[in-house]
Length: 423
Image 1 (cartoon, one colour):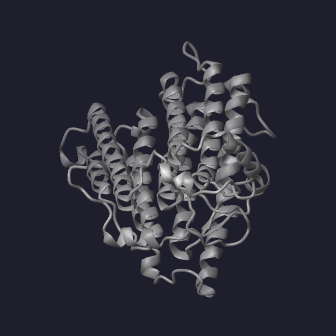
Image 2 (image 1 turned 135 degrees about the horizontal axis):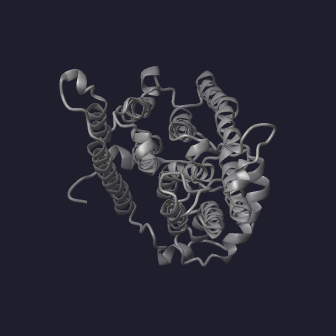
């Protein structure tokens, strides 16, 4: 890793003491998906590492992204000729997404079966999920197209998705408990079904108004309303309750808002570039712009996950934001008012290309480095089950496998234990 270390002694000692607290009250998760996953995981050989299941599921979402982008890079080909998106692409995307969702559900159970539970699994899982937070909404944007859902509105929907993913981790940073949101299971089912319907009936199906509204507008409104009504108030209440009952980390106000600073900075900088771009970058390169934002978001989120799991101080700033600051400054500068030639379209494109490349390489290096350091510290292999691990496990039944996607038991109570998904 060219001599760069991302985890210090405090991080590693914190991971050694880590215990996973989970509250899962999702009806769909507890009563439908877990019984299904309990059956599916029994078909998985014990020599398959849980992290391999997680990574395979993530790769399927990446395959979907590139496959759909090949036919519709600029969100304008879903219902257009001469290159409409073939129906088989949507069917395959639906299958890939549901398989990825299933693998994400059984990896924690596989970790318990193979005796490889530990903190690496949760970190690996949530880290990859934070990247999927930008990939999966893009599928929906492609279905609706830029004609009905302009890229600038897609951008704000993406920010809303980021916020909904990030706040539960801030909540855990303050309370010590992961309250699994209901929305995840319903979103994965909803997107999978939507992709399948598109494959059967075509993208034109989503042009049919429902109660006088286009489906894309219903989709947009639902995301915003669900966040304001069912997500954010519950998170605020859980944080308030932890301070009132003194059951959380009891961090000071300045420490409590630290995780919000890098995320807010990302939102401000990206929004400034979108709204003040000299050439309308969001309309020129919407898909690449979303990936750039999503990569930065994933890096910020991963660093917060490391902090809350190791019970260390959250970062106040993310170094990759320095690159975004510099690029944003040069792209929104009023060149004519300064007596300079205006920024050309090609230069702004190249700035986006270069920024996306740099932050992607840096984020991959960070993720690989953290995994390697944790594997070295705990003397484990990320994608391999140690031969002596399975020997320490006993024969498990359905009840023993009844752990959620992060390796904890899916009931409505707090549970402290070390058997989180480590893979």
